[in-house]
Image 1 (cartoon, rainbow over the protein chains, first blue to last red):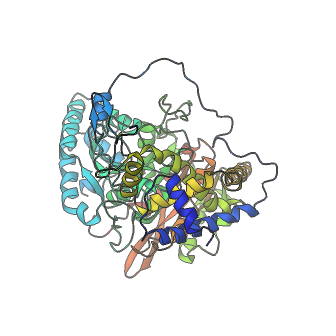
Image 2 (image 1 turned 135 degrees about the horizontal axis):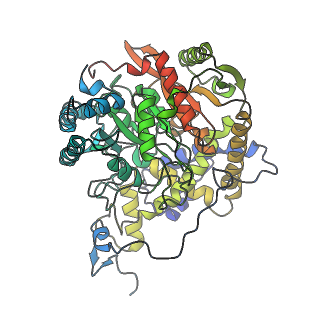
Image 3 (image 1 turned 90 degrees about the horizontal axis):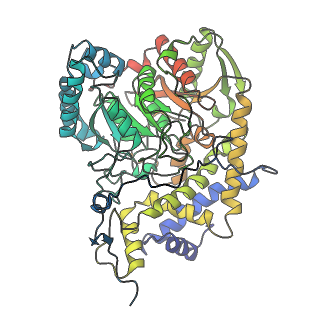
Amino acid sequence: MSLTRAQVEGIAHLARLEISEAQLPVYVDRLSRIIDFVEQLSAADTGGVAPMAHPLADQAQRLRPDVVTETDRHEKYQQNAAAVAAGLYLVPKVID
Amino acid sequence: MSLHTLTVAELAAGLRARRFSSLDLTLHFLGRIERLAPALNAFVTVTADHALADARAADELLARGEGGPLTGVPIAHKDIFCTDGVLTTCGSRMLSNFVAPYDATVVERWKASGTVLLGKTNMDEFAMGSSNETSWYGPVRNPWDPVRVPGGSSGGSAAAVAACLAPAASGTDTGGSIRQPAALTNLTGLKPTYGRVSRYGMIAFASSLDQAGVLTRSAEDAALFLTAMAGFDPRDSTSVDAPVPDYLAELSRPLKGLRVGVIREFFDKGLDVRVSQLVQDAIEALRAEGATVREVSLPALPLSVPTYYVVAPAECSSNLSRFDGVRFGHRCEAPRDLLDLYKRSRGEGFGDEVKRRIMTGTYVLSAGYYDAYYLKAQQVRQVIAADFARAFRDVDVVIGPTAPTPAFELGSKTSDPITMYLNDIYTIGANLAGLPAISVPCGFVQEGGRDLPVGLQLVGPHFAESLLLSVSHQYQQLTDWHRRLPEGYA
């Protein structure tokens, strides 16, 4: 196994994913297989090769004028939220 | 010949000549969906009311002699595209309650072309899968053999078009998700150049690889839909601002003089010998029409799958962080605190494959591992892209199989993620290099008394969609594989 149980628990925490006790060993096994598989990249000769920044050469992220282009549609958007009040999203209490 | 077996080009001609109305067509397809879609599990949502309203509007336009070539043509959208006021699930429990508040650009453009929305098709969860078995809504079955997968992740779109439940459907292709299902269901599947079609409103998986396209029953139909969807969109920051050619007009380009490169690395030990033979036969057919054929080597291409399984999960872990149980999507019951809300909402809302990819991505991007995995993968990606660029100095298109085998049985590859990942071994290269690619039917193999379709893949230089479509169209003038329909659906 290239990954330990503790590592997988750490990754799950970083990714904010709850993984059950029963499922954890399965994740350790599958994720280890994936990491072992991608490990073959380390043998590739990439000396002097710049990492790809964009799939199309000579293209860069566009800039646009810093102006308001959207209208306020928060009421429509908030219809998909589990809990809202007064236009705000509700979450469990964060500060006592 | 019945309405549902006609191509889009034939339907358009019939609509224009008033041989049938869009309402006739729409009712016909809705009837077939009601009868045949449940056994295939091809749709997540059928939008009958929507479709009837669209059809009536199209008929009014047609009656006035207005509208374009797609006016009144029924279509389906992969459930990854946001559709205003319609459930948009992305095949996930996470979005099983999500009603999109706006239309994706692809949806908007097909709508503006006068198409009729029949429904939203099933798919692998968040487009992560090659068999349509990771969907929260259950697997899709292949109309050519119901014990087999239709491919993925655009499996519902593929099954729907192959079973003549819709004349065409949208798809997305991050590592082969249009081409591989097209190959497994006898369809034409086009993945355009990265940036050719807007990603706005298309739920993101891996933003540097994702590209929208279409699944149809002919290259001519694909040309019609690409014309309707391609072009610059200021709402997608990687949309390319370049003119859109008349794809239909360029279909007639002859094969004579075409320089074809056969990719040596694709004819490897993993390739089914029957698939290999059919692809060789197709290459011979092109040669017989005056194309020149030579072998090309893309030495880094065998590294495309491991490269992809670093880059795509890395981007996925970042993209899917937006699903937090707060603003939209699944929220767990009675969270103890904010951390518990995040963890349980995401743990419950995502399926195993999605969680594996988020975690793989989180790992390869984490401090201490970033250089060894992510940076290295982006370097190898550059080498793969350079291999393609070198090949295109000598040939116009490169060619090979789309998938290593015909459709496999449900459940046969679900226990080991790597076995499943290797289904995309021939398709991923085009995504990594941002190249356009197409899969076209090139014959059948027999298995268990069933005919199973095989796909031929063509990959071209950036923005060579016209060439890919014309070669495919010319090949489809020589062969009739693409006109064959699965038993029980003709």
